Length: 382
Image 1 (cartoon, rainbow, N blue to C red):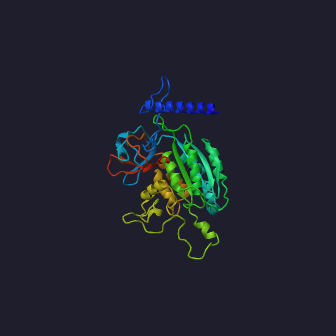
Image 2 (tube, rainbow, N blue to C red; image 1 turned 90 degrees about the horizontal axis):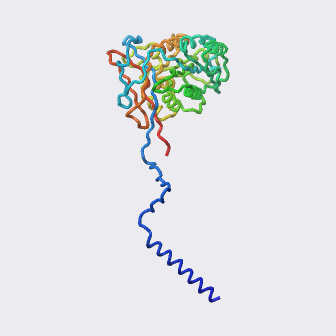
Image 3 (spheres, rainbow, N blue to C red; image 1 turned 180 degrees about the horizontal axis):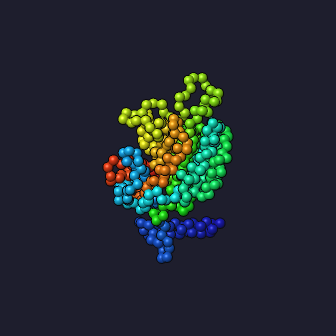
């Protein structure tokens, strides 16, 4: 037993002696890799600023003179585009010729029953005035739910038949949810735009009251995606005054003198009331609201939601209250779409996250230019 203990003590001493020798001979720095061994790279610096590149900004630009008439004789050299103050090179320029991919969003709430016959007559206007000969369109209806009534097609008869047979349902109005679906439909259309081929113009045309009820989607989120997908939103604000007059009052109090979303305040000083500015007479800064909504991506914009959506994407909101009919509004939108300039650029020199301000200038006096004011790049999480 004493011999085993003695041998164990000698073995333990030898091990400790070798370990101490190894430590005394170990280098101070890291060991060099063996020949042929792969060197493990250090983890990336998560604090380093990542950059994102937006492949293409493709936008319609509407130019009118001081009389409100469309200007048709401009060239690419007449425009100057800046992105966050950095001048950009125009990669594609066209006047009214690029075909259209169109999503038509139609309110199918029971609230529009009194004007349903007028809406059913709009099918031929969608195909001939808006979609055009080389375009394509899809139709989506919405109330308490959202229904894809017709997928993308270039068959005008198919679009017209769906609109002619339009039916109403529940009284809900999930406008923002429907807009989100429309944006996803347009964003997925192929071919995707590139510098060499910007593809079709992406347009969403909404016929609805200018209020939302029950949507899970936030307006700001819809507008962010629409801007990045180069989608222009146009809106025809439906008047439900006749519906309100024929329905039982839901609460006591004076009857509204205008439908939802329509301002009854006088126009701003120096601005005469006229078609298209009925709901902006309270001198609301729609551009500021549009930028705020996109930056914060929430639903705090209430009274001017569709006007803000149109301003944020370079489109226009037309109310059918007062003297403008649904037919006239669609006709005006179609005329504008096919008399616009389409300008594209690949952003350079400005890769920051957050809001990118776009400015479009025309080198000619007394011109009024309308284009989307920018886009928002979401920073990565973490």
